Amino acid sequence: MRYLSLQADIQIGDKVMSSKLSSFIPEGLFIGEVTEILEHHSDSPTGECFVRPMVSTSRVEEVLVIKK
Image (tube, rainbow, N blue to C red; front, side):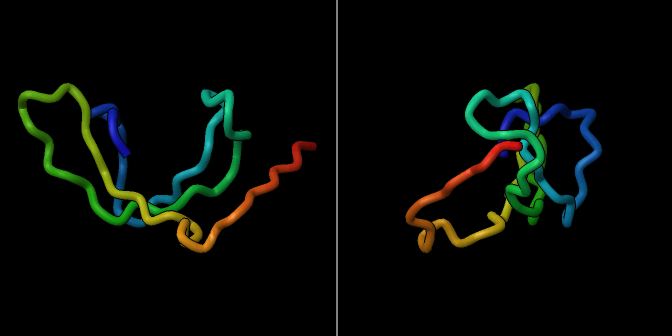
C-alpha cells in the first residue's frame, strides 16, 4: 500500500478495509492485513506497507458485490 501519511498510526496486523473514498469499491469490505511496514526514505513525503490479501488472488475468477 503506497502513499500513506507519515502521521498514520499503522501497525503490523492492522486490518485494511475499503473506504468511501473509492468510487469503484464499496465501503467496508475487508481487503487484507498489514504484514510489513517499509522504512521511510527522506526523499518521499509518504510511507508504504505490505498488505496480505484476504483471499488468494490467483484463485479468484469473479467477484460479485451486492450493495444494500
